[in-house]
Length: 116
Image (cartoon, rainbow, N blue to C red; front, top):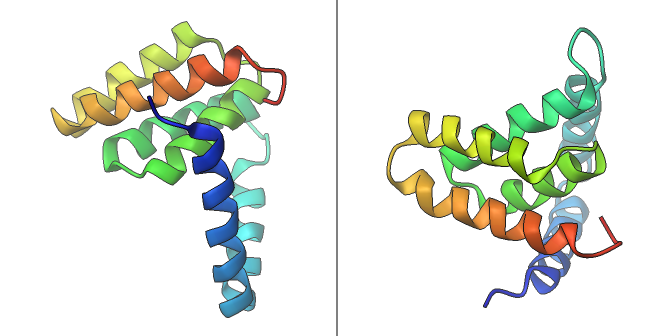
């Protein structure tokens, strides 16, 4: 069984290394993230669900972890996440089934904890 808490910690450590090595780029990326995810016509939950679908389709594990956590924080439920995964599989093909399963496993684990 995967240890997603350890994966989150490792991702944070790696992000800190990247930020130290390329602070201007990472600060600019963080500003882009804030701008793109700012609620406008689409609310934050919808934008996070879209980002999760893309993360599954392009098979980015770190992105999946981040966006699953953010989706849950925005109030998404497991049924909504499963629908997003279904669309991601449509767009990403068979390999996205592996990452879609991972996304739902992460969501299930985080849903059972209070540290979402």
